[in-house]
Image 1 (spheres, rainbow, N blue to C red):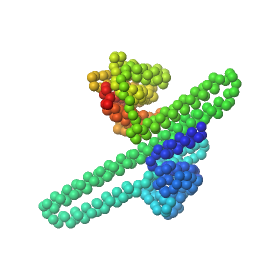
Image 2: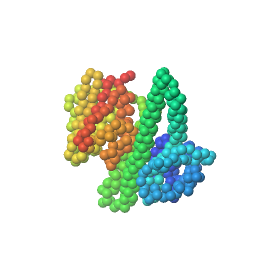
Image 3: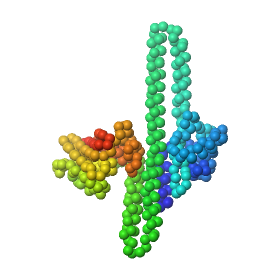
Image 4: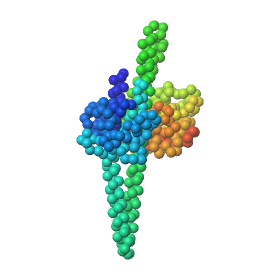
Length: 407
């Protein structure tokens, strides 16, 4: 079980393109990923047990200890070096500018800090180039103001291009900042999603050894089911990660065939019924017995299951989930409506982004991968997915698919 825990952790580290460094409360390095090793110029495993100061330039050592101690007292996730530039030290002694997000966590009673490190050398070079461009343009303005007519018009065009370049750079920088924040949030989210079921498995395993009498079989069965459910949940998460990798590398091969819609709907609702909360009810779509599709049946089932399961998960007890299906000569439209918590307006633009979770859903289990996978699959099948949502009232997700897949 512990080997599985370690393998999962290393799989996660290996899937992150930025450098990940984990240190204990004594500032000793306990884990790094391949990106961090390459970034600082070390071989795999070479940094383990080394002090964190080995990656910090010598002239920053004096102040680093106080910053680290202050961070460990508060134990709050934050960016490192706010308001000032920070640098990393490579093995060959060279330094480079970095950006780092700090994430404290505790495992088996021990405190650790996970740092997500990004080499921003290219960004700094771009900023310097922009500054040089601005300086050059300002000098050019001073010279050209002495001229008349056509020279003034040329200067206005130059200035307009400069402003456009600055706006484009600002937009790109803002997008990069948002992406980095999402990645930091993802690391914390996934750590929690794996930690919780693994703790449940460990607890049930220890309790199983205490029930040795025949009449205690019921208690043994209960803990065996807990272990099975937790392993199944972890397996689903790993399958999602594998799906993401296949989609990114274009390795998904779709197998379209003709099938009855009622078959897929029956399978989805049968599985969903086992997840229903007290008083929840799924309304079966009307008049679908004669509807057929020529598409990848597994992908259609995956997409519909994801929407129905989300409707159940984010709706309270005694609510209704409506499934509606319409079909014309060219297109089939699926709608799944719930009466749940809805999606906050400010989060709606990011709801299909990978690893993103709405603010009001952070306390509910999930990785933020499902809708992203569904969207990518549907777009590959020339379909689309969109939604309408009213916070604290309802959400309606809609899928549109062509009745016949392209050959």
